[in-house]
Image 1 (cartoon, rainbow, N blue to C red):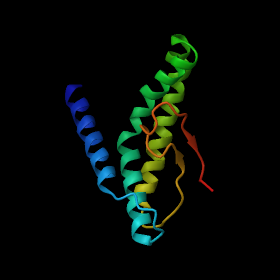
Image 2: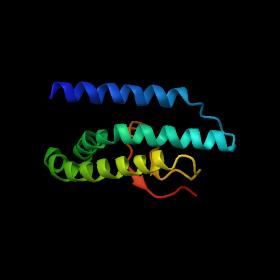
Image 3: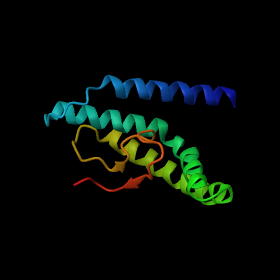
Image 4: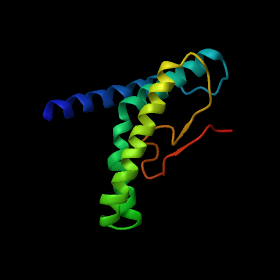
Length: 121
């Protein structure tokens, strides 16, 4: 278990460094769009599991501990799968620019915001 946690922590740190290293330019050129999509996809694939404690925590704060451990856990599982799958799809198709599909862009930004899905207009 310790080895798995260490591996996940290392992957999460690598994802964060990778995202920080990619310039967040507002230019609409192809290179910037595909680099941004690759960074989003990589980060969301590697850190999708953070949705689980995020939803438990957020639901507990909004409702109570019982709801956090039941409804929050269920929402966390759904959002973990959702963010990871969307991230993997963005990673595989990074060379085709497309609008962001997950809001917030990264699981930690901001941590207390509800995760939603759908292309931005």
